Length: 489
Image (cartoon, rainbow, N blue to C red; front, top):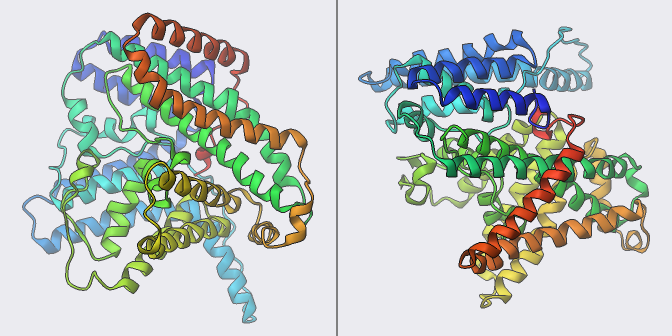
């Protein structure tokens, strides 16, 4: 069952209607049954795998309070080994055995990995990270373990975010599942708007950009010009943004229909003025997860509070030695390499991670030497540099191979490659229109909307017209042809 289908919309309407008719305990049972049904529409046999991961962390976390430091550490290691072991087997078995076979072949050793038929479980990367963060937060003392297994299971399986996030943390959601939600018409209206907005981004924009992206990356890499490479980075950057942010919007909206609030997962990332700001705005739940549970520990920083609700007041204690720049740079490189692998078992994703590690490192090293221009010149210059750099970072994410990636990047350093164009003409026009629409949307939200706040009738007329047009377009284009891109991760 995917969000861009009539089946899901009917399913959601049924669940929400029953939700508000039940007492709190009944609502939890409804969430669990609905979530298992939602996931089971894909493949029922993998429900057991998800519950094994969830039950393991539930049981191990219960043994942490009052235990000795050594035992608590042992329980944490057991949790990480079980979860990452499952993730490794289902997602990376072919990748590592295939590369091991290739390396052994270089030394004349013939070895054939076992022939297994492994299907990648839907959403395994997301719910694995979610349960690991729960165990780590209990280990760190940020939260007490949840003793009500039903409520804990709802936290892990909650269907709006189950397959592609946002990655929830226990401190954000468990208290909402414990406290009865109260009917609020404003939440209903806001939730429906978010769902409509998400469907518009997915079925009207992302799915109609997909053919241009597929056709562009299907061209022989060596026959494309430099402007083609830049355009492909932009057009795929827009496609994946519309696609993934659409899922987050629908997930946030669906939860809001039940009075449950998720943190935002995107905030105009393509208007960021630096790589650092970009990763504070793109897939926020993952980037903050990677920061709190991977990068900071690797950098030698003890995290006292990793809840995203208190992200502004993150308490850090830096032990001696963390001022070692080489240590921090290596931690950054390793973190991004792992983040690349998290996205997919392919060297192209590793290259994507290394690209961003080098971009962030370059920004970190160059920042002290950058001119301190006053607004608006400083932010404008930062945006004009950051946007193409981040868009070009999508090339390895979408390219068919590392070889194609290197060839495409190589075109940018060939002066002759700037003298011709090799893509469909409408690709350049559509890309320019998407860029213009993005900037216009930001201007409307940041400049026009505050002006309309004091003009209720005018704002109501404008929003009604906007959502009516969006609704008509969604009705015309709504069809489950393309699944969400992040389903494959």
